[in-house]
Length: 175
Image (cartoon, rainbow, N blue to C red):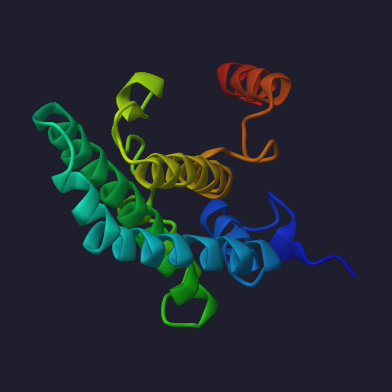
C-alpha cells in the first residue's frame, strides 16, 4: 500500500511538507543530530565559562577582541541550531503540529555570520578554534536539512514546463 502522505502531489504542498518534517523528527538522523547539537552546546558553554575564560585573559588585546568576536559568533550559531532542533523535537513529541514547524519564523537563519577563516583563528586558543570548526560543520549540516525539508520544492511540486505551456494554450483558446 502506498502512503499518499509521502507522495508529492497527493496532498497539498503544506501537508506534504509537514509529513516530511514529521518523518525527519522521528528518524535516527534526527536523534544523532539532536544529540550532537546539544552536546556541542553544553561543551561550548562549559568551555566558555571555565577554561576559555582563563585562556582569554592571557591573550593580547587584539587576541582578546578576536576571542570575544569569535565566541559571540560561536554561541549565536549554536543557539540557532539548538532552536531549530528543539522545534523538530516539539514536532516529534506532539507539542507542535508539523505544519506549524514549516512557518518561516522557525527556519534557520540564512546567515550565522561569516565563517572564520584560517587567519581569524590564529592566536585563538586551540580549544576555541576546534569548537568554531565543529559548530560550522554542524550548522552547515542543519542548514542543508532545513533547505531540503522546508525550502526546496520537490520535483512534483515544481510546475512542469510542458504542462504549464499547455495550460496557457488552453486558457488562451478557451478549451
